[in-house]
Image (cartoon, rainbow, N blue to C red; front, side, top):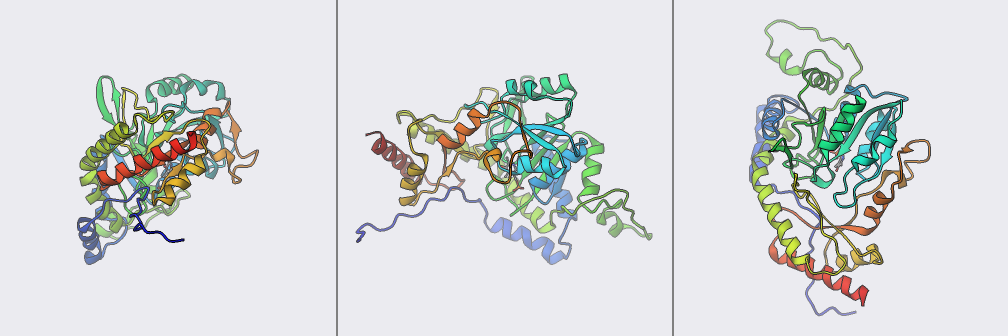
Length: 393
Ligand SMILES: *Cc1c(COP(=O)(O)O)cnc(C)c1O
C-alpha cells in the first residue's frame, strides 16, 4: 500500500517537562560526591512541604513505598481491612496487601472517578483499620464528607495523592493544596507520568511528628541515626536498629532534579489548566461525549484529561483509530479487582463496583503535557470527533 501523505508526528500520552535546568541540577551532587539521601533530599523535603503547606515531608523512592510506610504508620497489619477503591492504579491496593491486610473495594462517583462517600459506611467492619482514598488523576476526592465519616468511626485517612501535586481543595472558605494533608498522611509520586518527576520518587506529608520520625527511620533500614547526622558528628556514634526497616531512599541526584521540577509547578499548573480549558471548548459539541467534571470545591491539576465515550461505542476501536493517526491514548483507569493478581480471597467487595467498571470500559485518557502545541491538541480533537462520527453513522 502506498501512502502519499507524510507520516504525522506522533502525539504521546504525556511527556515530562525537563531541560538543561534539571541536567545542571543533577551535576551538583555528582560533582560534590554526596549522591544519596543527603543535603539535596533535605532541601527538596523542605521546599515540597512549603509548596503544599505541610508541616513535615519525607522523601522516599516512590509513591508505592510511601503508601506502604503510611499504612504501617497508622498500624495496618495482618488480618486488618482497609477501605479503598479498586478503580485506581494497582499500587493503591497492592500497598494494603504488602501489610498483610485485605483491601475492601468500594465504588466511585461516575463524574469525578473518586471514592463515593456513600459507599464507605456499608463497607466498614470490626476489622476496618483505615481508609485509603485516591485523588484520581489529580482530581481531589470529597475529603470533607469522607473525613466526617472517618472521624465517626475513629479511622485514620491516608491520601493517595500520587497524581495530585498542585491540586487544591476549598477548605473552610480558602483554597488549600492537597498534601497539607487533610487526612493523616498524603503520598505523592514523582514518576514521569505525573506533573513533577525525578525519574522515580515519592514523598510522604503529615502534620504528625511521630509519623514523620517513623518514616525517616523506616526508609533507611530502621536505623536510629541518619547518615547526615553521623557524617557531621565530631564524635564517634554507633547506630542502632530498634525495628525492622526498609531501603526506600531517594537519591540526592533525584532530589536535585525534583527541586528544579518544583520551581516549575506554578507554570505547569497554568499551562495544564489552559490546555484542559481548550479541550473543553474543542470537544464541547461532540454528541454523547462526557467531559471531566470539576466540582466547585476542587481545582484539579489536570494530570489527565479523561473523557467518557458513548455507551455503545467500542473503546478499543476508537483508541486504535487514533493510534493509526499517531495519537496515543489510554483506556479509563484500571480496576485492581479485575486483574489476575487479585483472585478471590485477596480482597473483599465493600459493595457493587458498577461505576468503577463502567469508567474503565467507557473512558479514554487524551494526550496532555506541558509543551503540547495547540495544533497537536486540535489534531487530537478532530481525530476523536471523526472517529466517533464514523462509528455513529
Ligand atoms: C502512579 C500512581 C501510584 C504509584 O506511584 P509510583 O511512584 O510509581 O510508585 C500510586 N497510586 C496512584 C493513584 C498512581 O497514579
